[in-house]
Image (cartoon, rainbow, N blue to C red):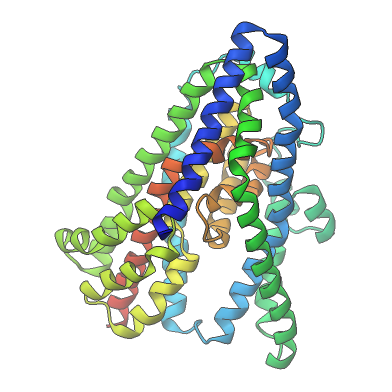
Length: 414
């Protein structure tokens, strides 16, 4: 099987699972058939198990990827001028893109019609262990809570932003430890990251079943309106991803990289086409390298900045994850305060560096962002089912952002 077939078939099965679940739920709601309603009720525990399977991977996955990433950069000497510039470029671009998405998506999603009775029914179906929406703490309290008194309690409570801050601090501290002592700890987290990526891959393979089990009860509670809401999410995610490319990524690359638009667009096109079909940034890496060379990027920059960007810099995820969590908040009628929007921005930007290189990986690591927004983790399963098309464009944006990083850093190096 080709790489393209290996990614397209699971995506089609996931879409089929979503469609079948929505159809079953709508039929059960419309007909009030006792057998169909019994089937829907029986599927709820299956959906809960699928969401819990995703949730159990999040803490070790995010922690291991952040720490192993920081240590590997130190070990291979990539925190020199080029590596630092690439990381700062990716971080700055992710912040701007996420902020742009919030500014546009919040008022747009406020206009998406969701029946209040259906939303109330949906909230009643939340399992007891799902966190309730957070309140609106003051900025001083929010700032204080960023430093956890007990990091293990923060992990157990799902307080992901304080946990991420501790992880970053620990990772940077580890780079200061002598190499022979650092190697043992780095090897542990590297192995943990590899194992968690394998586990995530297994869970993603079960996505059609999990999405089906989650979609049926959702449609039974919300009726046919859920399909319209999901369509709104897909359209908004795609449009904002393209807008971020057109209004932010391309202009920044043209100005900072001093490359004409026509030349940039022509060079990026093959890599973008591969990204759309494969939904994998790493599978698009050879085409990204070709694009960087066609744009005159110096060979030392091509050799390590472009692979670094492909593995860590995710400008498309900054759009996709932000839209997804804002849509989930709207779906579950969670009102987000300015402080929560700030927390969403920070957590989104950080987690873009931990997205696993599998189709739909951005949705898997969305659990921390949902947590800081006070949105039920069960939203992950629904978003995963509707994510095939947004993921195509998100990957295309990730690839374009990686090429842009090579061009801009290469221009500075020249």
